[in-house]
Image (tube, rainbow over all chains, first blue to last red; front, side, top):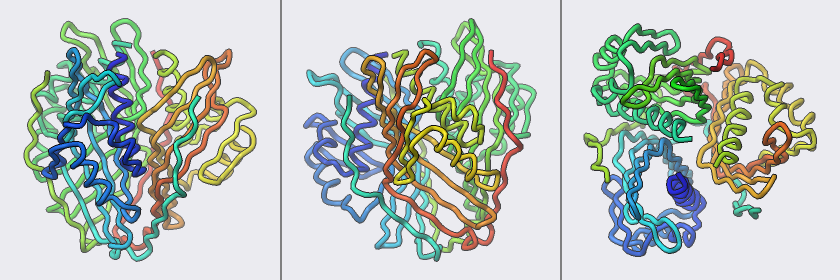
Length: 152
Length: 152
Length: 152
């Protein structure tokens, strides 16, 4: 149960730092040799993956990734997890909006510093995209820059 | 805690196999005498329920059902659970889209093979539907056929 | 683990009673001296907070608030929690729709009656609003009045 809880926390940290563009903390969720495959967008190492995110998910791109329904199996120092992803991508300057869903399949390993991701990836169930110029009244605002809160 | 975790896993399997249209695995979430009532769409047995889904949720109908906020009470070999459902239904050929929410109220029983659903159902909080032809730019794509991953 | 589970249940009760407009049960989630700050909409006491909700979230306003990704830290009789909020607000008579996301940061305390919220609040990551009159076909229906189910 403690392992499962730690693996859930790892996933939440990965997605929180992704959406808040905190790339150093995001990188710390992975082992260096980690690989990823997001419905065909594939990466062969942590540096490649984090470098791509840093370069492509700038302040003009709003993302929301929430993961649900953890189905986690732990076997010694390895674990697999299925998660049900919902995601939203908004690029106001491009009038672009996307909503979709996917099933994540993660592989994690126990390290001296805690659980880390060694492979992550998902397969889409569906994806829907549209131009926000079709909804003339649409207004999008972003919050003020978010800072992680002090913890107890 | 182990019972609660097993009951959560049952719910996730039920929703994953529903959205992936894996009807045999979906059926295995229920006892044969199970009943259901989805905001008035009611079924008197597992066969009736699964038969309906198999007949009506074909490949042209995209669904996403995610359940949140488990409030589970276990009493011996019985359990009740409230869940907060969010659902999306897309029927591209009919230009139909629906998004809604509901509170699930489940009743589960412990069997020699693990927890199973004996009654499931929900009451809507709201439902919103629209014709996708009102958003001219809308594009919907589905993933490749999903296969459950090998587990550890 | 039991504390974390109790704190999750508190959050689910708070959001369920908010969306079902059950204001007495909603109030019971807080200590009297509780404060709140929802992206600038701030309250200095439980009475102030609950009074505002009671006055402003009438039957014509449909809300859905789901909270995901609990990152909970317990320290003795105090706890902090980060949650990832997704929310939808619909006001059919005003043709108003809003969808957004935020990170909640809660502070809870253990009381003789269980965990209670002493401060809650969130900072937006984004917010998107639009007039439903831009989507001519849109139909919104609400469920029948929801009553909490009998529990085991």
